[in-house]
Image (cartoon, rainbow, N blue to C red; front, top):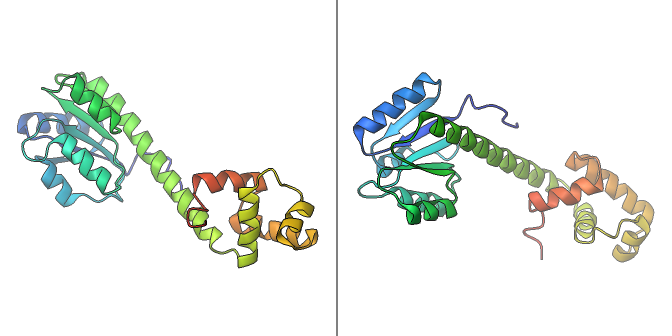
Length: 214
């Protein structure tokens, strides 16, 4: 199911400064956000569940595993979590490094509450878009697996040769009749729950349907 709102999204707040962490948590809670606070990257990782939607508001310069280390660790887990860095010490090199690694933004303390709220809104949008895209991919791959061997052969040929659209030419290449090609096309569209071959070709790119094919 496609996610369309942020009701289940959580702001995961990680900062070793108890005062700042508590202040931010209160402010976000008053704004209606679900907030979970952690005093270190390590405690966050202990509780981390990649299935939970949300974003990470992360202090850059913590002792032990710092913010950039946590960002790298999550990337190594193939866990997509939009990150908003906050820092009282970070400079241009640090912010550039964090942004290049995919951070939503890098806010220097003290920052305006409106800045953080705008970043959280963007982060939630990014998170939901990524989760929806992942769901589309999973659904497409499951449907693709429902195709028969011959239907997959026809689908793969069409995907790899998008300029070859006529049933006659596809049939000639696959050594089957145009009528058989038409039959397989109809079954492919039905099983994939799409309306056209153009959609199949578009979907093949976003869902990487041919990732396991030579």
